[in-house]
Length: 357
Ligand SMILES: *Cc1c(COP(=O)(O)O)cnc(C)c1O
View 1: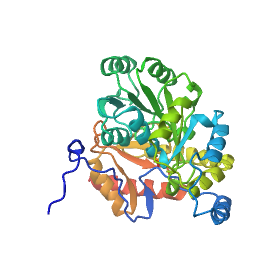
View 2: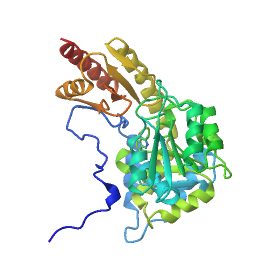
View 3: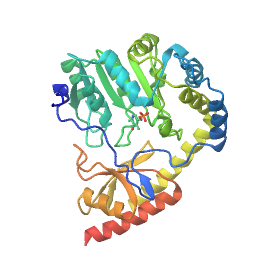
View 4: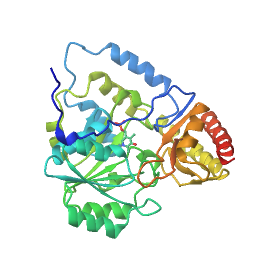
């Protein structure tokens, strides 16, 4: 007996991975360095005890969507929730991409945009960025005209480079794009503007958000889109029935009631980010500015992968982006707690001295 061949168009594509190694300082996946507020955990315990487990959950996740709609000043019909914002992206590709259609990305950017597009049979057109990782307006408009993508992915702040996309440029892309424009705002809380303000039922714009980063809830797997109501209706059509379980809905609802605590964390991370950037500035590395909870840097001595390994040997895990196109030699570090950032900076100083010898 032999096993059947999988879909030919999957090719030899690897799954998406980030190392899950047991280390003391984990700064590789842009999670919040802090656990959720103890009060939230307590309330969730109570909520979980009252769920009717023999019944399917609310298919529309109504309460959660109402709460998110209030938070962002949109209608509940303009909110789509899913298992992480990755499932939102997948639903978008299922509904608006697919065979014979194209998705456009601007590299380097979040690898899952092209990965999910491929998995859904959507052809991927990858355009570039300027040296400072911003978008070149003329190039963007030319590519839109030439390729006519059904879905255009922007990421603001952009992972892994840390810069926000320019507001007027996002507006120009939305005006010019022949299809849907998706602005991935997984790090939106850290940035000084949001594409949320450009949303309208008449505008082909979708903004995606996640509970995985600022909300300290990566384990819950909850994300959402703010989008025109007809787009949300399409996303609901392609989502599996009852895809959002009752525990997740309760967890999200309780979290949205704690925006103030979340914003406090954002403030703390932003302060630590500035300190981290200053610390990096004293070492032989090139550092890029960041509007997110991570910082991209390039060691001036030694190959990036060797520096990454040296950090790992000191039980500090960062993201090795050194072999990614457009990011030669670069590493990405997530902003951690004060103690974690100090550990990282000390370890990096040691590694650079050693590698530089
Ligand atoms: C981390 C991240 C996400 C989050 O995905 P979830 O599925 O919500 O955990 C989405 N987009 C970008 C750019 C990210 O960096």
